Length: 252
Image (cartoon, rainbow, N blue to C red; front, side, top):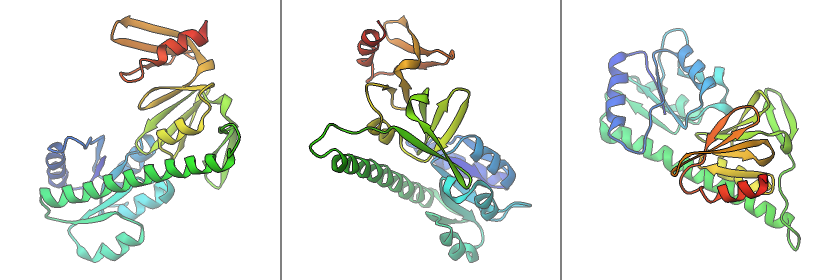
């Protein structure tokens, strides 16, 4: 979650309220719209609590600059209730009117988390249904090419060019060589539609291409990493330790 407000006291109040919620992680705070745009481009979040009135670039300007398709869920924060209609016109999930208390902030966050869960589940279900229809009576079909939006165009890459995929909120970052691409898809969906003979999920937040793995590193009995050809090291987390045996077998 990203907090954006040009009033230091407002930022402090939101931070203190959210610190009491164990399901919420604040990944950054911004004091103006330009900072918010840079932060959202660098590290997407699931949710942004976004002040409407800020100098130079207001909350609506932030959405225009980042792009509606790349914006996380938005809860607008303001002391002025005359922005309510316009806020919902840009698909804001909620609207917090200052001053607000714990219960109002928590209700807004709960609404967003529920919506994210619904979107993730629906996307995964749509993919499963599509593959069921394609593969009726046949062997399951897996993704062969991927369209990566870049402004008005989409770059098409073959999946074997992908080195690794990392979760970033409700996005995934897809790495191919020294380039990365952000795609608004849950990592659970990517795990479903990629061929397990080519890709393996090593944690809740990472999928790697088997052909890119050069080493398996186990410094302790409880630690395990896969090292890729480009030197990137990714931890194999608890719950995914069983993949190590498969990796060793495939790499031999």
